[in-house]
Image (cartoon, rainbow, N blue to C red; front, side):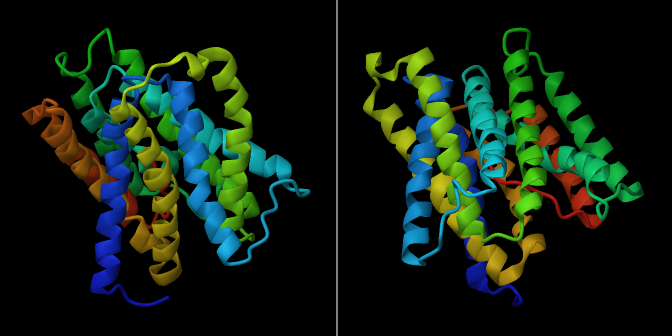
Length: 297
Protein backbone atom coordinates (compact mmCIF):
# COMPACT_ATOMS: atom_id res chain seq x y z
CA UNK A 1 0.00 0.00 0.00
CA UNK A 2 1.43 3.38 -1.05
CA UNK A 3 0.71 7.06 -0.48
CA UNK A 4 -1.88 8.38 -2.97
CA UNK A 5 -0.45 9.89 -6.14
CA UNK A 6 -2.07 12.33 -8.55
CA UNK A 7 -3.19 9.40 -10.70
CA UNK A 8 -4.89 7.79 -7.67
CA UNK A 9 -6.92 10.94 -7.03
CA UNK A 10 -7.87 11.02 -10.70
CA UNK A 11 -9.12 7.43 -10.50
CA UNK A 12 -11.05 8.24 -7.32
CA UNK A 13 -12.82 11.17 -9.01
CA UNK A 14 -13.47 9.05 -12.11
CA UNK A 15 -14.99 6.29 -9.96
CA UNK A 16 -17.23 8.82 -8.22
CA UNK A 17 -18.35 10.24 -11.56
CA UNK A 18 -19.15 6.79 -12.97
CA UNK A 19 -21.18 5.77 -9.92
CA UNK A 20 -22.99 9.11 -9.85
CA UNK A 21 -23.83 8.75 -13.55
CA UNK A 22 -25.74 5.57 -12.73
CA UNK A 23 -28.71 7.50 -11.36
CA UNK A 24 -29.63 9.56 -14.41
CA UNK A 25 -28.96 6.53 -16.65
CA UNK A 26 -31.34 4.48 -14.51
CA UNK A 27 -33.87 7.28 -15.00
CA UNK A 28 -33.45 7.09 -18.78
CA UNK A 29 -33.62 3.28 -18.73
CA UNK A 30 -36.96 3.38 -16.86
CA UNK A 31 -38.51 5.17 -19.85
CA UNK A 32 -38.54 1.82 -21.70
CA UNK A 33 -37.70 -0.97 -19.24
CA UNK A 34 -39.27 -2.23 -16.04
CA UNK A 35 -37.25 -2.23 -12.79
CA UNK A 36 -36.77 -6.02 -12.73
CA UNK A 37 -35.46 -6.10 -16.29
CA UNK A 38 -33.15 -3.19 -15.52
CA UNK A 39 -31.76 -5.10 -12.53
CA UNK A 40 -31.27 -8.24 -14.64
CA UNK A 41 -29.55 -6.60 -17.60
CA UNK A 42 -27.43 -4.36 -15.40
CA UNK A 43 -26.07 -7.39 -13.56
CA UNK A 44 -25.66 -9.37 -16.78
CA UNK A 45 -23.69 -6.66 -18.61
CA UNK A 46 -21.70 -5.90 -15.47
CA UNK A 47 -20.68 -9.54 -15.22
CA UNK A 48 -18.85 -9.49 -18.56
CA UNK A 49 -15.78 -7.33 -17.73
CA UNK A 50 -15.32 -9.12 -14.40
CA UNK A 51 -15.38 -12.54 -16.09
CA UNK A 52 -12.86 -11.30 -18.64
CA UNK A 53 -10.60 -10.11 -15.82
CA UNK A 54 -10.79 -13.49 -14.10
CA UNK A 55 -10.01 -15.23 -17.40
CA UNK A 56 -7.07 -12.90 -18.05
CA UNK A 57 -5.63 -13.34 -14.56
CA UNK A 58 -6.45 -17.09 -14.54
CA UNK A 59 -8.49 -16.75 -11.35
CA UNK A 60 -10.75 -19.67 -10.52
CA UNK A 61 -14.41 -18.68 -10.11
CA UNK A 62 -15.98 -20.67 -7.26
CA UNK A 63 -19.58 -19.84 -8.05
CA UNK A 64 -20.75 -23.45 -7.54
CA UNK A 65 -18.26 -24.40 -4.83
CA UNK A 66 -19.10 -25.40 -1.26
CA UNK A 67 -19.60 -21.69 -0.48
CA UNK A 68 -22.26 -21.25 -3.18
CA UNK A 69 -24.90 -20.34 -0.57
CA UNK A 70 -22.87 -17.30 0.48
CA UNK A 71 -22.37 -16.20 -3.12
CA UNK A 72 -26.07 -16.68 -3.88
CA UNK A 73 -27.20 -14.80 -0.77
CA UNK A 74 -24.83 -11.90 -1.41
CA UNK A 75 -25.83 -11.77 -5.07
CA UNK A 76 -29.49 -11.43 -4.14
CA UNK A 77 -29.02 -9.04 -1.21
CA UNK A 78 -26.18 -6.91 -2.57
CA UNK A 79 -27.20 -6.78 -6.25
CA UNK A 80 -30.68 -7.97 -7.18
CA UNK A 81 -32.73 -6.33 -4.41
CA UNK A 82 -31.00 -2.90 -4.32
CA UNK A 83 -30.79 -2.66 -8.13
CA UNK A 84 -34.54 -3.35 -8.34
CA UNK A 85 -35.49 -0.99 -5.52
CA UNK A 86 -33.37 1.85 -6.89
CA UNK A 87 -34.72 1.41 -10.42
CA UNK A 88 -38.24 1.32 -8.99
CA UNK A 89 -37.69 4.45 -6.92
CA UNK A 90 -36.04 6.49 -9.68
CA UNK A 91 -39.18 6.16 -11.81
CA UNK A 92 -40.85 8.83 -9.65
CA UNK A 93 -37.91 10.51 -7.94
CA UNK A 94 -35.40 12.85 -9.53
CA UNK A 95 -32.08 11.13 -10.21
CA UNK A 96 -30.16 13.81 -8.29
CA UNK A 97 -32.30 13.13 -5.20
CA UNK A 98 -31.64 9.42 -5.62
CA UNK A 99 -27.90 10.15 -5.47
CA UNK A 100 -28.37 12.13 -2.27
CA UNK A 101 -30.56 9.45 -0.71
CA UNK A 102 -27.97 6.79 -1.55
CA UNK A 103 -25.26 8.89 0.10
CA UNK A 104 -26.79 7.91 3.45
CA UNK A 105 -25.25 4.44 3.08
CA UNK A 106 -22.43 5.19 5.57
CA UNK A 107 -25.04 6.13 8.18
CA UNK A 108 -26.92 2.83 7.94
CA UNK A 109 -23.56 1.07 7.72
CA UNK A 110 -22.49 2.62 11.02
CA UNK A 111 -25.62 1.40 12.78
CA UNK A 112 -25.48 -2.14 11.36
CA UNK A 113 -21.72 -2.41 11.89
CA UNK A 114 -22.22 -1.53 15.57
CA UNK A 115 -24.71 -4.39 15.86
CA UNK A 116 -22.84 -7.06 13.90
CA UNK A 117 -19.12 -6.18 13.76
CA UNK A 118 -17.09 -6.20 16.98
CA UNK A 119 -14.41 -3.73 15.84
CA UNK A 120 -16.81 -1.03 14.56
CA UNK A 121 -18.75 0.21 17.57
CA UNK A 122 -20.56 3.55 17.72
CA UNK A 123 -18.90 6.46 19.52
CA UNK A 124 -19.88 10.10 20.13
CA UNK A 125 -18.44 11.34 16.82
CA UNK A 126 -20.33 8.64 14.93
CA UNK A 127 -23.53 9.57 16.75
CA UNK A 128 -23.04 13.21 15.70
CA UNK A 129 -22.58 12.13 12.09
CA UNK A 130 -25.68 9.91 12.16
CA UNK A 131 -27.81 12.72 13.62
CA UNK A 132 -26.57 15.21 11.02
CA UNK A 133 -27.21 12.79 8.17
CA UNK A 134 -30.68 12.01 9.49
CA UNK A 135 -31.51 15.71 9.81
CA UNK A 136 -30.35 16.25 6.25
CA UNK A 137 -32.77 13.62 4.95
CA UNK A 138 -35.63 14.93 7.13
CA UNK A 139 -34.98 18.42 5.77
CA UNK A 140 -34.99 17.09 2.20
CA UNK A 141 -38.27 15.24 2.74
CA UNK A 142 -39.91 18.43 3.99
CA UNK A 143 -39.81 19.85 0.44
CA UNK A 144 -43.22 19.03 -1.03
CA UNK A 145 -42.07 20.05 -4.50
CA UNK A 146 -39.48 17.26 -4.46
CA UNK A 147 -40.88 14.67 -2.07
CA UNK A 148 -44.66 14.42 -1.86
CA UNK A 149 -47.43 11.88 -1.35
CA UNK A 150 -47.00 10.57 -4.89
CA UNK A 151 -43.31 9.71 -4.68
CA UNK A 152 -42.70 9.30 -0.94
CA UNK A 153 -42.87 5.51 -1.21
CA UNK A 154 -40.42 5.56 -4.14
CA UNK A 155 -37.96 7.67 -2.15
CA UNK A 156 -38.22 5.26 0.78
CA UNK A 157 -37.51 2.34 -1.58
CA UNK A 158 -34.23 4.01 -2.57
CA UNK A 159 -33.28 4.34 1.09
CA UNK A 160 -34.15 0.68 1.68
CA UNK A 161 -32.07 -0.26 -1.37
CA UNK A 162 -29.06 1.52 0.09
CA UNK A 163 -29.49 -0.45 3.31
CA UNK A 164 -29.41 -3.74 1.40
CA UNK A 165 -26.03 -2.69 -0.01
CA UNK A 166 -24.78 -2.50 3.58
CA UNK A 167 -26.29 -5.85 4.57
CA UNK A 168 -24.65 -7.44 1.54
CA UNK A 169 -21.34 -5.89 2.54
CA UNK A 170 -21.58 -7.38 6.03
CA UNK A 171 -22.28 -10.82 4.56
CA UNK A 172 -19.28 -10.44 2.26
CA UNK A 173 -17.05 -10.28 5.34
CA UNK A 174 -17.86 -13.96 5.87
CA UNK A 175 -15.87 -14.83 2.72
CA UNK A 176 -13.38 -11.96 2.82
CA UNK A 177 -10.48 -14.42 2.62
CA UNK A 178 -11.29 -15.11 -1.03
CA UNK A 179 -10.04 -13.04 -3.95
CA UNK A 180 -12.19 -10.02 -4.75
CA UNK A 181 -12.37 -10.98 -8.43
CA UNK A 182 -13.67 -14.43 -7.58
CA UNK A 183 -16.24 -13.14 -5.09
CA UNK A 184 -17.52 -10.40 -7.41
CA UNK A 185 -17.77 -12.71 -10.43
CA UNK A 186 -19.56 -15.36 -8.37
CA UNK A 187 -22.16 -13.00 -6.89
CA UNK A 188 -22.79 -11.44 -10.32
CA UNK A 189 -23.40 -14.90 -11.80
CA UNK A 190 -25.80 -15.82 -8.99
CA UNK A 191 -27.54 -12.47 -9.32
CA UNK A 192 -28.08 -13.13 -13.02
CA UNK A 193 -29.35 -16.66 -12.37
CA UNK A 194 -31.85 -15.43 -9.79
CA UNK A 195 -33.29 -12.34 -11.49
CA UNK A 196 -33.36 -13.56 -15.11
CA UNK A 197 -36.41 -15.89 -14.77
CA UNK A 198 -38.24 -13.30 -12.66
CA UNK A 199 -37.75 -10.70 -15.39
CA UNK A 200 -38.90 -13.12 -18.08
CA UNK A 201 -42.01 -14.21 -16.18
CA UNK A 202 -43.19 -10.89 -14.74
CA UNK A 203 -42.10 -8.21 -17.22
CA UNK A 204 -41.72 -10.30 -20.41
CA UNK A 205 -39.10 -7.97 -21.92
CA UNK A 206 -39.48 -9.46 -25.41
CA UNK A 207 -42.78 -7.58 -25.67
CA UNK A 208 -41.07 -4.23 -25.11
CA UNK A 209 -40.34 -1.69 -27.82
CA UNK A 210 -37.46 0.14 -26.10
CA UNK A 211 -35.93 3.34 -27.36
CA UNK A 212 -32.29 3.38 -28.42
CA UNK A 213 -31.59 5.93 -25.69
CA UNK A 214 -32.93 3.68 -22.93
CA UNK A 215 -31.11 0.63 -24.29
CA UNK A 216 -27.77 2.45 -24.47
CA UNK A 217 -28.26 3.72 -20.91
CA UNK A 218 -28.96 0.18 -19.72
CA UNK A 219 -25.85 -1.21 -21.42
CA UNK A 220 -23.84 1.65 -19.92
CA UNK A 221 -25.27 0.86 -16.46
CA UNK A 222 -24.02 -2.69 -16.68
CA UNK A 223 -20.60 -2.18 -18.22
CA UNK A 224 -19.52 0.96 -16.36
CA UNK A 225 -21.28 1.62 -12.98
CA UNK A 226 -21.51 -2.14 -12.33
CA UNK A 227 -18.51 -3.77 -14.05
CA UNK A 228 -15.79 -1.22 -14.85
CA UNK A 229 -16.45 0.75 -11.66
CA UNK A 230 -15.80 -2.37 -9.60
CA UNK A 231 -12.48 -2.86 -11.40
CA UNK A 232 -11.49 0.73 -10.60
CA UNK A 233 -12.53 0.22 -6.99
CA UNK A 234 -10.37 -2.88 -6.77
CA UNK A 235 -7.42 -0.94 -8.22
CA UNK A 236 -7.76 1.78 -5.57
CA UNK A 237 -8.14 -0.77 -2.78
CA UNK A 238 -4.99 -2.58 -3.89
CA UNK A 239 -2.95 0.63 -4.10
CA UNK A 240 -4.23 2.77 -1.24
CA UNK A 241 -6.61 0.80 0.98
CA UNK A 242 -10.24 1.12 2.00
CA UNK A 243 -9.99 4.45 3.85
CA UNK A 244 -8.81 6.27 0.72
CA UNK A 245 -11.37 4.52 -1.49
CA UNK A 246 -14.21 5.34 0.91
CA UNK A 247 -13.82 9.05 0.13
CA UNK A 248 -15.83 8.33 -3.01
CA UNK A 249 -18.97 8.71 -0.86
CA UNK A 250 -18.34 12.44 -0.52
CA UNK A 251 -18.27 12.96 -4.29
CA UNK A 252 -21.12 10.77 -5.58
CA UNK A 253 -24.07 12.98 -4.46
CA UNK A 254 -22.29 16.09 -5.75
CA UNK A 255 -21.80 14.59 -9.20
CA UNK A 256 -25.34 13.16 -9.03
CA UNK A 257 -26.85 16.62 -8.62
CA UNK A 258 -24.66 18.09 -11.37
CA UNK A 259 -25.36 15.31 -13.88
CA UNK A 260 -29.11 15.34 -13.20
CA UNK A 261 -29.15 19.06 -13.90
CA UNK A 262 -27.00 18.83 -17.06
CA UNK A 263 -28.59 15.80 -18.74
CA UNK A 264 -32.17 15.73 -17.44
CA UNK A 265 -32.76 19.41 -16.60
CA UNK A 266 -33.77 18.33 -13.11
CA UNK A 267 -34.72 20.92 -10.57
CA UNK A 268 -31.97 22.07 -8.21
CA UNK A 269 -33.31 24.08 -5.29
CA UNK A 270 -31.58 25.64 -2.32
CA UNK A 271 -33.16 22.92 -0.18
CA UNK A 272 -31.39 20.23 -2.23
CA UNK A 273 -28.04 21.98 -1.81
CA UNK A 274 -28.52 22.52 1.93
CA UNK A 275 -29.62 18.91 2.42
CA UNK A 276 -26.67 17.73 0.36
CA UNK A 277 -24.27 19.73 2.55
CA UNK A 278 -25.79 18.36 5.77
CA UNK A 279 -25.65 14.74 4.54
CA UNK A 280 -22.02 15.08 3.45
CA UNK A 281 -21.14 16.72 6.77
CA UNK A 282 -22.77 13.81 8.59
CA UNK A 283 -20.82 11.31 6.48
CA UNK A 284 -17.63 13.23 7.23
CA UNK A 285 -18.10 12.89 10.98
CA UNK A 286 -18.99 9.20 10.65
CA UNK A 287 -15.80 8.60 8.66
CA UNK A 288 -13.77 10.87 10.94
CA UNK A 289 -14.64 8.64 13.86
CA UNK A 290 -12.69 5.78 12.29
CA UNK A 291 -15.53 3.87 10.65
CA UNK A 292 -14.42 2.03 7.53
CA UNK A 293 -17.67 0.71 6.17
CA UNK A 294 -18.93 1.96 2.79
CA UNK A 295 -20.41 0.07 -0.14
CA UNK A 296 -20.61 1.00 -3.86
CA UNK A 297 -24.01 2.05 -6.14
